[in-house]
Image (cartoon, rainbow, N blue to C red; front, side, top):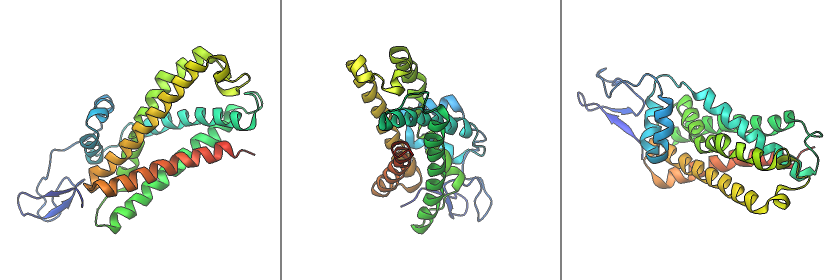
Length: 234
């Protein structure tokens, strides 16, 4: 139950992210220096496991911060909407800072903590992994959410303006069919990201049950942290 590289020279088993054999120092695979952002974004949709493997093996986790901050920004918008929905206040009463604090920070902190936890969970079952690799694959697993930021968010503003956040009146009263379609698409992007969490975990474990349990648990815990901080606002 793990993805490993077997040295063709000495036959030693090596961790999947290794470039050189720990036994004889022979090359185990082709060198991957940087993450090709657009190639990664494109391939993560139709070949998520092999894409996660390339992210793991890349020496430089470039675009990692960009990917994480884009997702954090998207969750800050979601948090702002949930915040106003739950407490019934207007955009002026709850400035964007609240959405950032209750959406972005819980997302970033919970993703980092989960990535650290997975490193130790993997180790407990015999899978050698690195914290930076886990952070990278799980940040990139939110690529569908980033897609919704660039595609759905402009549509939301075009159709509802600030009323998408204020619920005064509710967008579901203004244009119910459009609002429902957008919400369904938003949930679709989240489901897609949940699947990528499982696929990214599978890239290291090669065990479907383990990957589903760990990946889905982490995804829903991250999502839950954002929801809790959004709904239970003081």
